[in-house]
Image 1: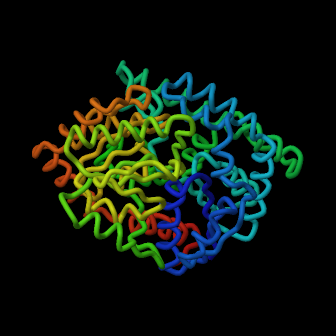
Image 2: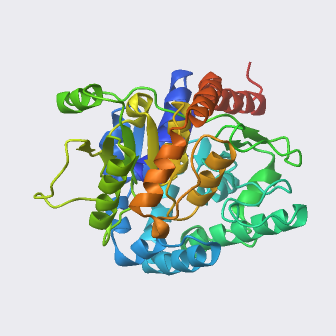
Length: 428
């Protein structure tokens, strides 16, 4: 049976879905990943089929309008910046919907990221099975506020439900117009676009799977029985990848270093300033660091101290276990990988779900308070590093890591999907 998995975003967004695809392929499913065209080689390296969406995520993310989206560090700014950014790329979003529609045609099972929900409508149109896979909490509950409001005040169950209602509507707004226009122009059947696809997927009774640990966000009692939380989805081994001798020598040549990096959060106008802050903070805290450039860059003549080594793309599942602590932007995948490795975590959030992960890290006692990017100074970062390397914090982080490593997130998700498909088709 054929399964299409649709996701779009950075490599951090893509990797959990590749891990799920590998797991499904291993139990006999014919799996295809539908994602941006520039990720084809990356996906095919794992032995998965690929269908291209005609967008280059890195190129789009480097545009000025999209850069503004990374500054949305509170709900109002997040929404207004994302609506402006969405309008600026509307033509490419329309083309994206058509590409996904084409990619889904020959598959019976459609698995989708909540930010790319058109597979739900395709499944409904053609009587296919749809499965929503959430890398971060998106399902409404009375028990805690939505991810966008998580770091803010707590006013009880009704307020929490309201924040989820707002988040769902706003999240749907980002793709609704392009999906609705594509559907009206090309498919032309009647479809309910007034209710969010998240809500419709839950009500359908088909699986909704949360790809994070219940140790990070607990399972609410008011969720429907078709909502599952499996644990995080990790790629355990990168094919055809080996660390450079320079990197392995650096890691082994002194005290265990920190990892510091911000992934796809392109700090276009201020990365040199940010880098100087990092260097000073390392001097103040007397630490060494592996600094991940991600989508940022430095001038070739930049002076790099001996206590620092720069890296580009690197498998965090290999790197993080060798670090003493990790400092990053708080993306869901990077956060999960650091905690899985049992390392104290310092989050410097830019936007979206990142502040929520920062607060959870601190609430769990496995790292310092999050430092909003606009408040980052060398002194504050150094203090957060020293706090996070306190033996009590280190011990809590390792304890949490041990628990997370016992979870089998991909295996759990594969079983949920496989059991549902077999029950639906009366297979044994």
